[in-house]
Every structure is written in structure tokens, then in C-alpha cells.
Image (cartoon, rainbow, N blue to C red; front, side, top):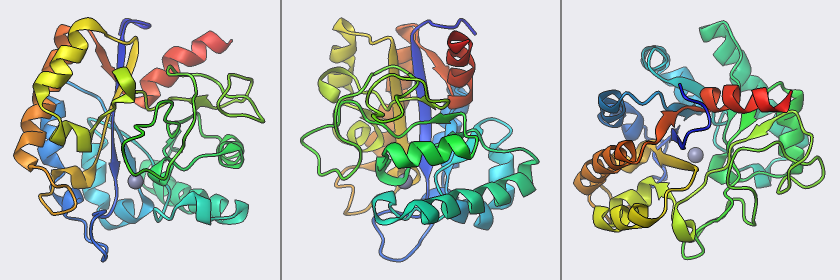
Length: 267
Ligand SMILES: [Zn+2]
């Protein structure tokens, strides 16, 4: 892999179906519809998986792990702004025990449910020997109802400051921000489904950031009232966006590969 070319970090948050009150997992059960598109483009993607999913769909996740990186999306997907220090540690410990029993190794990457991240959370991740976090959203889309991380931050991978994770510093955990295209428009599932492909194409015709992310949720592939968009458009737009990025010379990478590129810099 040519390091430091334009990089595109591709990931999916895999959890129970968000729009449902009950814990259904129809998105998880149909996830290969997205993964097959990634396989077609040769994309190594990171799958941020909850412990719930890993426990319930162990054999399926083992199969996915042959083509993709499996990382941590907490155990239960409870929101971290409602958890204290000990409860947050508990979420990670429970996940790590399960993960290690299956993969005989520790997970190195984490994304917080709903991107709820703060200094305390990053300190816990550092203590728990995670190598990278990918929860910070440097340009959150202001037009969206959104509860996660807000505020500016570097739009490329960086080592955060101990007392202010929005700044660069000396922490021993790499932050891989969820960086959007122009105007903070993220290449995220819900927008891929709603915004016509031609809009993305015209944005990329005059600006190609050095680092971007394409991220989505397991439930992005479900047709339901929460989405208010067509799942067919989602699949066709996703495929076309990935092809577009190939023509713009982006290298598709997962979190582990980004960590390998950026950890060399630190030494
Ligand atoms: Zn999530």
C-alpha cells in the first residue's frame, strides 16, 4: 500500500436495528449485501461491532473477519453520556473478554455509540490498550439532529491532547476522525441514501480531501419509516461513490492500516 496517498477509511457500525424499539438484528442478518459491494471493490473495511452482535452472530462474524477488520463498538450500545467511568470500563472489558475468546487477540479499534466521546473515554481506551479510536466528528452536519461529538478537531488522523481531545497532543491512542467532504457533508449511510449521486460527483470534481471516511450502519440497508429514503438508492449510490473514489485515486483502508501508517510517524 502506498502510504500517505489520499486515504479513504471505510467502516460500518454493526448493532441492533436503530429504528426499532425492540432489539431486532435484521441489518446484521442482511449485512452481506453491503459487504459484497466492498468485496467487489476490494475494500478491507473496519466493522465496529457491539458485543451483543458478536455474541449472537459469532460464526457470521468469524466469517467476516477473513475479509475485514473486526473492532469494538462497545458491548451493549448504551450511550456513554449516560455511563460513569466504571460502567464505561465494564462495557470494554466485557467486549474484550468475548473478543479474545473468539479471536485469540485483543481488538485495537473502537468507535463510541453515537460518537459520544470525551477525555475520560479516551483515557479509558488508552488504559485498556486500544490503539485507535474513531469517534470524533470534526465537522458535524449542523442540519441533522445529532447527539454525538460536536466541535472542531483535526480532519486527519492525530494523537489527541490529554486535557482537550480536540487538539493534537501526546496521548498514546490515535484518533481517526470521521471526516466529511466539503461543508461537513459526511459520506455516511443516511446521506448516501438521500443525496443524489450527482451531488457527490460534483463536489469531488473540485475538491478531493487528503483523508475522508465512508461510514454507515448495519440498519442502513433496511427500508423503514425511520430512513425516509429508498434502500435501492442506497446500494446503487454506495457502489457509484466507491467507483468514483477509485477514479480519484483514493486508497481504501481500514482502521488497523491507518494505525500502521500513522504510528510510524510518531516514533
Ligand atoms: Zn452505533
